[in-house]
Amino acid sequence: MSAAEDATPISAAEAAALFDDLRSAPALVIAVSGGPDSTALLVLAARWRAGHKRGPALLAVTVDHGLRPESAREARAVKRLATQLGVRHRTLRWTGDKPVTGLQEEARRVRYQLLAAAARGAGAPYVLTAHTLDDQAETVLLRMARGSGVSGLGAMARQTLLPPTLLPTSTADDATRKSGAVVLVRPLLELPKKRLVATLATMGITFVDDPSNRDPRFTRPRLRALMPALADEGLDARRLALLARRMRRVDATIEAAVDAAIDVVSDGTWSGCGPITIDAEKWRRLPAEVSLRVLGRAIDRLGKEGPLKLGKLEVLYAALAAAGADKIRLRRTLAGALVTLSGGRIVVESAPPRSSKPA
Image 1 (cartoon, rainbow, N blue to C red):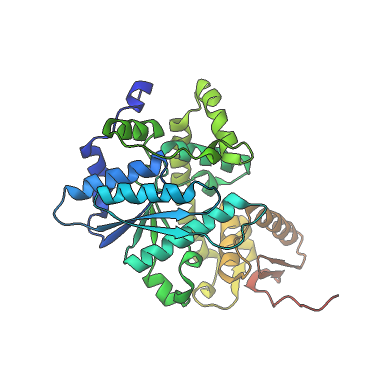
Image 2 (cartoon, rainbow, N blue to C red):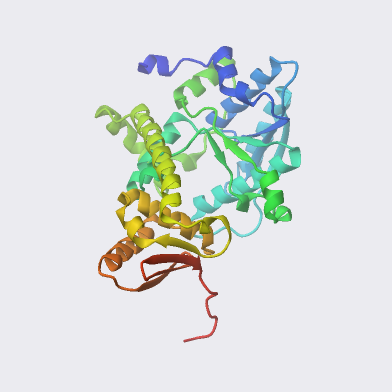
């Protein structure tokens, strides 16, 4: 698609294709900050819904982080627009102290937590966000800069299950969390930002300009500033998004191989909550990426200390592979899991609680 075509407004037929797979949902929550992308998402979703006699109830939600003096006024502007479009609106606020470091990461976590709570309250299984093709390209660059593996380079998928930790604390038991699962949907992920801005311009709808999107203190704005130069070399947003799609395809293939490998190297101990036993020799003969992921899955299942970092998993993998080749006993902990190599077996179990007493 040429640059001129990139700036064409989105038609009603295109909007229908973006949302029609969600038509049977009882309700949809639309995350709207007031910027061009989320404003276009609200307008397109409202236009699509208005074209059907039956369909999901729409609820626009604005999260006011309270980080800028203008945020409350911007939330009120979103409410006025939503009302004009016939869409209910709620403003949710991030109250309390804000962190000095990692502000954007914490703001993102709180935003999704509040959106998930709003979805549960509205009986909506889906939360819609306005991530675009440009956002996808930036995410790929960000993951590359952080040294991500295949899974990370797959960047964002159209649909992602929100982690249970983001659901309201009142639904703490696993069964309730699963029954109340909330799915994050990104309908605009294949569309460039220019087309969304053009759509709003055609309809005479204004939007908010958030200066933090250009603040060089944050990583994404710095990467965004690099995009024109990268595009001149052929590495534009579409190429980066294409890389992400291919990485997700590769990732799905590897995950299928891991599913099959678990049956080969284990003795059925994956079904319970107790220790997992892996045949060390069979495990070592697997392709490296597959054996790495088998180990990672076992640690994820029984570890109690949060997400498993790829770099640390790779270090443990190399130590196990070397110890197994030399018939050496090895015992390590990682992410709250205890991993023991002994007698030709790798045993993964939950690590005992850390002692609170000083050494």
